Amino acid sequence: MKENVQISNCIFETSWEVCNKVGGIYTVLSTQARTLQHDYKDHIYYIGPDIWKNKEKTNSSFEEDAMLLKDWREKANEQGIPTRVGRWNVPGQPIVFLVDYSVFMKVKNEVYARMWSDFGVDSLKAYGDYDESCMFSLAAAKFVECVFTHFMAPTDNVVYQAHEWMSGCGLLYIQKHCPAIGTVFTTHATSIGRSITTNEKPLYDYFKGYDGDQMAQELHMEAKHSIEKQAALHADCLTTVSEATDKECEQFFGRKSDVILMNGFEDDFVPKGLLFKKKRDKAREIILNVANKLLGTQMNSEHTVILSSSGRNDFRCKGFDVLIDAFAKIQKQELKQDVLALIVVPCWTKEARQDLQKRLVSKNVNKTPLEAPFITHWLYNMDSDRIIATMRNCGVSANGNCRFHVIVCPTYLDGKDGIFNLNYYDWLIGNDFCLYPSYYEPWGYTCLESISFGIPCLTTDLSGFGQWVNKQLGHEGQLQDGVAVIHRSDSNYEAAAQSIVATIHKFISLNKDQRNAINRNAVKIAHKALWKDFIKNYYVAYDVALSKAKHRNA
Image (cartoon, rainbow, N blue to C red; front, top):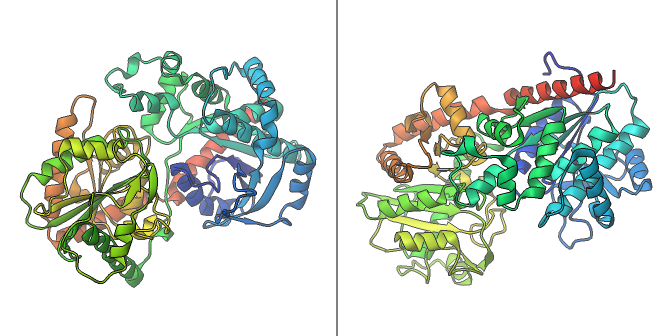
């Protein structure tokens, strides 16, 4: 419940990932929706881009309802903001508006000129997804302006929350044209922090020496950094997802966050009782069948430990470099049982392997591996993919005599990948231990998803989640706690790799009772990160924004 905060009449929450699953923000918004819908029944409105309109494939997460808030939709369309309305097909079924931003592309130069004159946003060197993101954000803001002007009273408490730089243009528009609305800007990862990391620069050793504007120029990030910084500086309430990213906000924007909005989760995604066991058994059967048919092995569920790492394809940020190095070290060591390590990360995927598909439908026992038995899907760039190249350079092999097997699944697990044909959660439940040795990780949703399913994980003290776990425990997370938090820095790469090796060895040496105890401890930590607790920080942010808006209009 909302405690000691102003009562908001309604909240508009906008992101490129509303009804558009491209990254972790989708999970944040789609899982928080049930809690917000409970407290703000049909007064929490999500706004996303209408990128599925007139396409052959349909958006399964959006259920259109032309009669829902029909007057809002018709007025928006009348004012040149093509809008569809419906429900987001996630727990809570919140109202969602999808705006067609394409109509604003023809006036983008005029929009950028106004952003420069009003807020000093420099869009001259924009490229890539900048135009689409800004015009979507503008369309979302104009929709809110339309609704606020025609259907709400000036005294109504209205909050506009914008996620990431992609929504910055709209937030600035609201700030100027609808000053009665309280604005919240949420940065999940600063564009400069991520860019420093992906460009192989040391983020931490020289952190205090980095100037955001200077680095934006050096890294050709002027446009994205400029709009992100100005949105951060002008928002009534600046928020981020962890103490780690809060430091970036202060360093790169010159403003600390007003509130930290940690990413929660809902345990209703996790099956209970006999259904959990049924789904786990099925997942393990499918995972091991794929591995055996690919590798020509005969691994079984009872005597095989299944490890995994997954997430976005940010090679250095996610720690795939040090993880593969650790795998190579373990392959050179003698193990007493089979261990299957899976790296599930979307790459430039061409197609599911037909030779593997043929084996999967066959009941024959295959004792010889397929060609390139380390990957489930062919890539367009098999010779240059960074993960595959690193495995090759580190000496990770598919040697049948080795009991530590590494397989790459280079695609999203959406239930239609052609090999596993399981959605991510139905696949995750079959794992035993998950590894996320991140170098740059503002929060770490994959870690929280893992332990919510009772699957212990390894992360680092550079991740926001790892830092939060250490704070909750009062000490550095250990394997027996359910989350092992290893130390990472700019200068301890080899030590980090050895820590991963040692933790894996420790895990596979545990007996069943010890693993069950660790699983229970993982769930205990997960229960401290439910939305029912973390959502209170959102309400504080709303209060900060509304207070400033009221003061501005007094």
